[in-house]
Length: 271
Image (tube, rainbow, N blue to C red):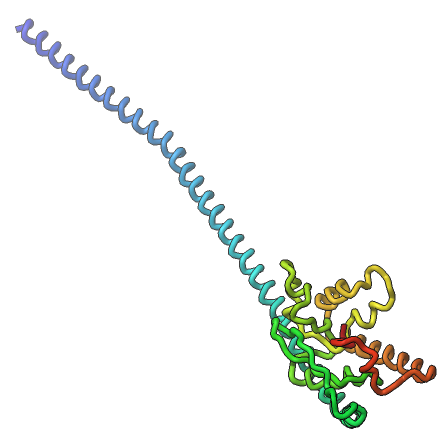
């Protein structure tokens, strides 16, 4: 009997020990898994944070690029708008002042044309000088002017071109179609963007003889900085220069109505 009890006790202890051992092993495994989970969790959060930062960086770069594109487009549109507005104001000045000058000069121009027609020997020769010129946008036109330089009536006779839009009151000189400046590989773009003028910055400043007053440099400067104020200043200075020249020639007794016979063929006062 005692022997059976001892055997049962030993069996019970063995079962209890096995169960305890088993539970201990499972607990350790669970603990290991929990430790691994706690270690993996920070690594996963760090990866997600890095991905978010990278996405934000890319989004910021894209927004910066879009902002730069918008600013560039804004500057381009603003520049085009300013240039269009400047050209519109310039054209308005040409129409208003050009029409007024043409009305005032019409009697003198008609009288000069009549005198030239009467003085022409046997009716030969034309009262008007006709020359091929290149205007705004490379458009060719026929420049017509009286064959006289008295009181610069040749310039005033070109006012109809100003009213029509072939010329401007102030601008670079109109060039011939075969002028090298038009056929050069690096032709200045402003030559096509501006109307040629009756007078210009080169005409009123080139007489100084200074190196920076070369006609090409002056024309380029005018193309970059032209405006209503500069145009009016050039017109006033041009009128003063022509008036002083005529008065000086009148005092010397050398002024004549027509000097066509003394000019080489194809001469133009614009050149």
